[in-house]
Image (cartoon, rainbow, N blue to C red; front, side):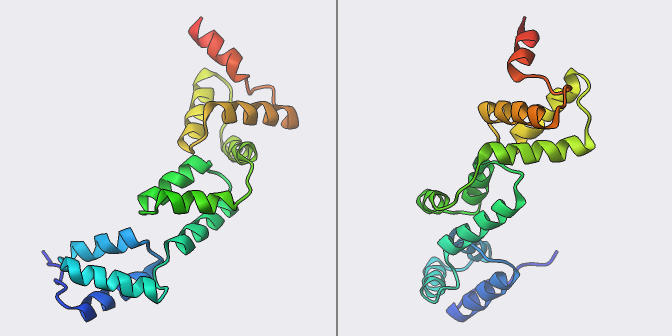
Length: 175
C-alpha cells in the first residue's frame, strides 16, 4: 500500500496546499484537515493557512458566496440543505448567515421546481408513490409547511388532481 508523503517544511506544505487548491476551492477547515492528514506539524500548518488567507488564496466568504450562487442556479434544494453542505465544508455559521442574508430566494418556488422535476419521471397514483414524493422532498431539505404550500400551489397551477392535500393525507393516514 502506498504511504502518503509526510510534510515537514513550510514550502512542502505550501506546495501541497496549492495542489489542493488547483482541484477546487477549499475552506480553511478543509485545508487544515488535508494538511493534518499528511502529518504536517501544527505550527507549519497554521503558518501556511495564514499565508494562504493573507494572499487571498483561501477565502471562506468567497467560497460560501460561490456555493450559494451555484445553489441558486441549481434550484432543487432547500436553504436547509445548503446550510448543511456549507457546514460540512467547514464554514463558520456567521459567514453562512451573512451571505444568505444577501441572497433573495423563494423556498416554495424552489420546492415547486423540485416537485416538477420529480413528477417528470414519477407518477403519483397511490399512497406509496405519494410517500416516495414526500421522502424525496424531505431529502432535499424542505420542511412540512413548505412542502404543503408547494403541493397545493403546484396542483392549482398544473391542474393535477392526483396530488392529494397533505392535511387530508395525514388525516386519512392516522384515522
